[in-house]
Length: 230
Ligand SMILES: Cc1cc2nc3c(=O)[nH]c(=O)nc-3n(C[C@H](O)[C@H](O)[C@H](O)COP(=O)(O)O)c2cc1C
Image 1 (tube, helix red, strand yellow):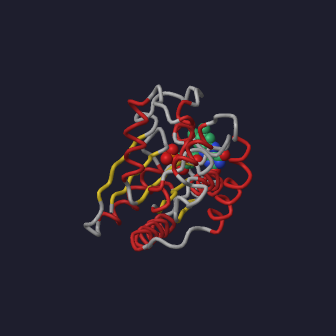
Image 2: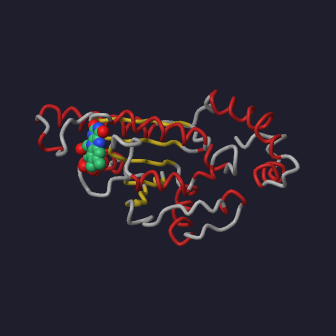
């Protein structure tokens, strides 16, 4: 199983610790090949907002973005690990990643590979579950087949400061989640994906007709009006 991992915290703290426990458990299967991207080092610039990706053209920061997109498309599974930050849920480094890959959503330039994948979101921080929602929504908009998550509500900035019993409980939860994630098979698409495809096909894409706009032309060329990309 090829796994591409995005580490969203600018330092190796609680989230890294939790993610390592999860990945170590996956590695015990002897059947995983992990590619890590540490943000912001792997993507040290902001999206310039040029929208070239929306029209199928090369990103001006392709030296950073192309290896990331290639690793996403080549993976069987994706892992997104981020602390919860109160202002807009996640560190800017993690949000920047989603700005760069936003063109993969169903209503712009969906990729059939995305509909085959499973994803796991690991978050830490007292409000950790708040960071899960926007990432999960984004992945569902990209058509990811199944999105799993675990939010660890830590109430401390240092893993080791948590009571020992809580550390053990979280370690076990991460290990169980990793095993379940490893075994998870592709399932029928989410009803959400089917409904969203239908809305995009019948309503959203029609708004681009005659405007010579890429999403419509791209959908037509790929045949998505006649055949779903999943
Ligand atoms: C700028 C910033 C904002 C934060 N905001 C929140 C918050 O609103 N709610 C919360 O529960 N924790 C918040 N935290 C704490 C982190 O989410 C928490 O300590 C997390 O486990 C840190 O993960 P890390 O060590 O991997 O960076 C914030 C931390 C930082 C640096």
